[in-house]
Image (cartoon, rainbow, N blue to C red):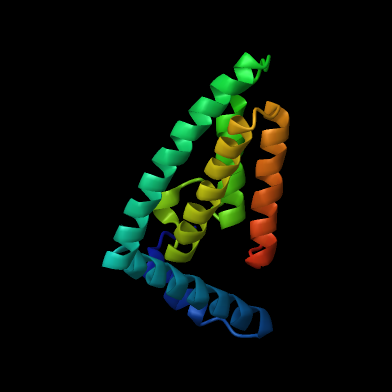
Length: 157
């Protein structure tokens, strides 16, 4: 057994030869470059402003979901509290945020998330205003978010 730090490992691994070694080296370099790009992006003023806008959008959506949960309970839902989690997961998934950590999202993902949350908020408000059944409102949210995913050419991972 040998103990080595990351630099030692990199020196050793970069010395390997062959097709599989080359593939590994390219993946390693691409991952490192992507990590560096993401770190630089998060330090930018644009990312920080977008993240701030995202927080504001999230608050509006959260307030609307709270109203929706109460609305669903009034209509007899016994699991209305789950809608908060389900709608949040749906929005994150479509935006491509797999870790459920918005602080690790890209500007592109955050901007899409703002739009998705706005869609959810508006569909809920519209459904409640029309006094629709809560399950139908949730179904409409799913449909509208899926439509957004399709027309935006977003792929959910």
